[in-house]
Image (tube, rainbow, N blue to C red):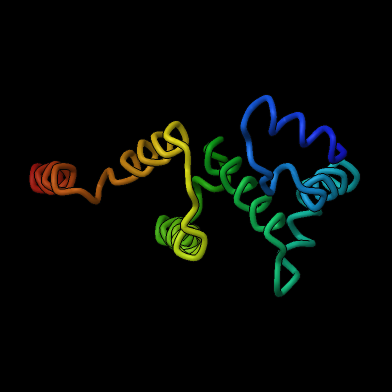
Length: 137
C-alpha cells in the first residue's frame, strides 16, 4: 500500500493514519505470512522493547486466543488468566493516558460497550448476584 492509497482511504472514509495503515504493520503482516503467527509472537516476546505495531499485533493475537476460547487456555489457572487481563488493561490504561486520543462516536460507543460488559463481576449488581449464588451453595 503506497501513500496514494492511504490518501484515498483517508479521503473516502475520513480515516486518519493508524498503526494498521503503517509500513511497520505491513512488514509485520508479511513476516507473519512467511514464518507464521506463532513464530512471530515468539520473536516479538524475546525482544525487550517492542514497536507500536508489535504491541498492536500482540494485542490482536491475545484477542484471537481469548476470543476463540482456546481449549488449552481453559485449562490454565484462573488466577493466571486474571493476571494476563490485568496486564493488558494496564497497557491500555497507559496508552490512553499518554495519547488521550480523539475517538469518533462509533468507536467510543463500541469501547464503552465492551468495557461495560467487562465490568460483569465487578459492579455492585453482579457482585450482589455472585454473593447470593455463593451463599445459596
